[in-house]
Length: 443
Image 1: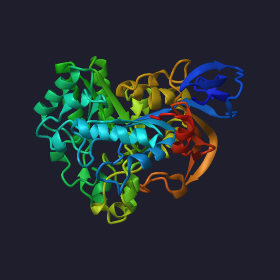
Image 2 (image 1 turned 120 degrees about the vertical axis):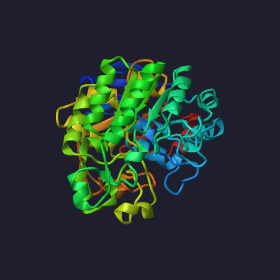
Image 3 (image 1 turned 180 degrees about the horizontal axis):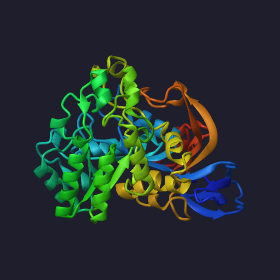
């Protein structure tokens, strides 16, 4: 029998206070005061109730790179960060370019039980950019893949990108493009500009991102397909997406928490924790992506959680791997960058970090938020808390966080997935034990 939970005195994202009754994995009632005999009670006095966060861009590394992360460890990191669903990128080994691998990833997520894990399928075979992957087979598999991406690599061949867009348009899928013109970024190490010259690091020009986005929105318009822009990072890219939307092109875009907060100046110390793809940009770019998120040009926030073994980051800058972990810190960084600065309110956060990514990714019901009849996927968050973010804040394998030893606002107190707590009082719950006692199927 499913657990019945009453959450007391939660503040919803619209500012109203309510009790929340959860029964049989769904939100059964919202009311100022709810009584339910035998229910488990969770106090949410002073806490914000947000729809469970949905990440459209997570690297879980399994299969093949389990030394960096596994579906289980990444799911735990997601839950402690307030996420109830993540989309697992395809750059695994073997690559998720066929039905067998995406079904394996989905099964691993179901076994882990902490979040819904939705596999992202590769656009091209082996991520090699030469031939389309088994898109139809993945879409028709038990995993029902709807998002396809070669993230980590750009689909730079215009004809291949056109064919991919045409293919996914037949079943309502979306191509999520890693916008990086490879010829303009060979050996690039950081944002191109005065600072890269001073540091002696090969520059990564903004136009390498903007040119691909411009090409792809036109291709999407030409074939009538959906395009999603991954980890947008430049002021010029915001303008291209704004132009495309004004033209009526079916394009969505994401920004990472780190591109909302951090700038290229952090590369000055050659600390490889700040080496990421796309690179940290100028102050002007950070201001532009914040404004783009606030005015709706950028649709969502996505983490691009990218764990690596210690040895891949604890080395000289030019040899270090690109990427940062971000699941455990994401909501705090969004609060610091756009909520505490007055650019977004909590209803906006629920939109860009839950409902809209759920809609883009095709997660049925998740886009309804906290509503009667909706899946019981929610996060209780204390925005008034403050914490020193350290190694003890991380629950995945990766420790390559740019926020170590940084004081961050806010703290996830409780995460509920599938009607059951995965996090209580800021600590992970053993969901295997929960499942054994309840017969629940998480994810």
